[in-house]
Image (cartoon, rainbow, N blue to C red; front, top):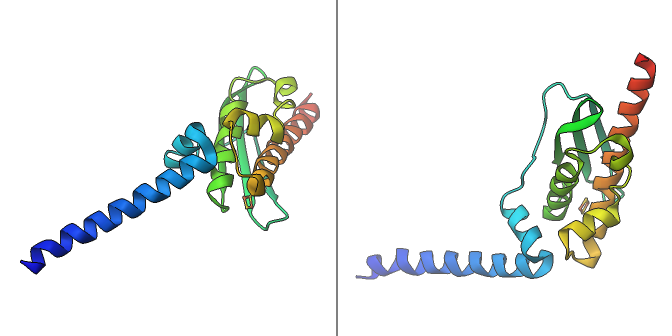
Length: 151
Ligand code: FES
């Protein structure tokens, strides 16, 4: 009888724990951030990108952004990070926001813009959005340098 009870109680322990983590994450990042944490879209790398940048933040984490452009607009974007859940959410939104943009529009993707897009973000992790934006801007500037050299 006890054997039958064990898996059940363990399962419900895990379920409760998972629910608590989900509730806390939703509370910290809002619904958009929570959904992205569960399903981090645009995770890289991208093969043969037109530009790629890797920036290490002051926290020690690394962010990478990959861009492919067609007719001077981003047709594919992806991120990679070895950082926390917050940097994953920010990298994913930075990549999403880059898609369809031309270089002028890409310049408008700042850390503040990423935070605004997510909607809610823990104060202590806001630097993750600035790292994602800085990496995106670095990828853009590399693309611009390459483009100018090829003219
Ligand atoms: Fe370092 Fe998020 S990027 S803590």
